[in-house]
Length: 275
Image (cartoon, rainbow, N blue to C red; front, side):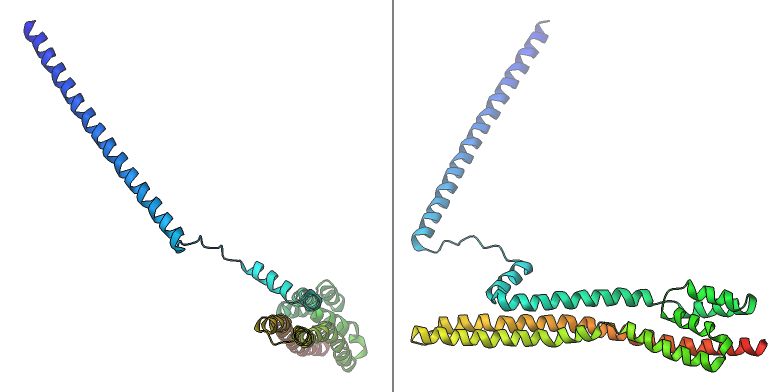
């Protein structure tokens, strides 16, 4: 029993002594960290004060402007009276381009598949079945086939003339609106140049009113004047890209129409020889 009490007493003394050492070390560590923090803060405060005194303190970096904000600022700087007209030209041209793209994409069909259906219908069910297939198929090629089958009883020569005539009408429909897009492409730079010339006139009037040639007056007037030309050229480039795409699309459709009609005439000739 005495040994147990002695052991417990020794263990308690050891635990108490170890705790005291740990607490003392923690206190010293906290004091050291506090002193370091105070020294660092004092140093930073001195650096800031010296920076303000010397005027060399770095200012916070300004946020970079986005593309839309830059475009908006330049649009406002270029005089809204001329920039607004150029913008209306872009909107009208893009509206026509989008309408033409949708129309031409809807006019695109699988012509080979249509030819196979018409040929099978002629061989199995006759002219009326082939006519129904063409009637229920969208696109200019199906319309040409329908006109040809509808004139079949009048002879193949009449069928060919009907196909050529109706094909010219459909080509006109495919090219509808392209002349207006071409007009907007030509007008946009002209409007920009007009704004530039008028801006230059205003700049020279400002120089005349000031009585001397100031770099600020000249540079400001030149900037406003040239912005209209830049925006006019940008509009022309955008519309020109769409215009070239539309021209290529129309040419592709016309070539498919010509190839398909030649094959279609051969199918009708073969059908006539059998009957």
